[in-house]
Image 1 (cartoon, rainbow, N blue to C red):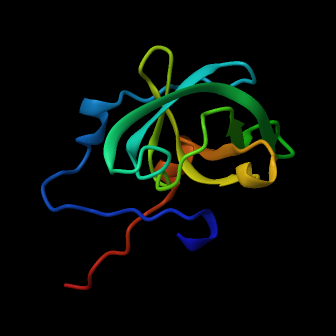
Image 2 (cartoon, helix red, strand yellow):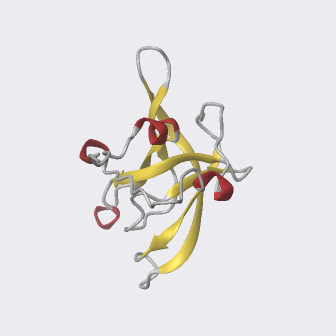
Length: 130
């Protein structure tokens, strides 16, 4: 799914196990909602250690029907978080990180961008011919 910097990997026998770790939030994400990104970021920590970075939803992009198509977060800047889960204050999965914008070295604010969790259901792995 290259248009959204996302890959879906299917592991035989592991169907539907992601919801054991991260129950999915059904309601829409809103500006100001508290969120956390979980992952193994190399920067700014210098090693690939598991991290939890907290922030809030800064803005949302909406489609013509008012559905959120992506959202921007104030989570601290870090590389290597593409594909990381974004959870809300209740521990519910709300999205996945797809990139960031801004240049900290140039003094610009850096914001992570995420796709809402509903896109995970829309991404389907190719099936193999029998």
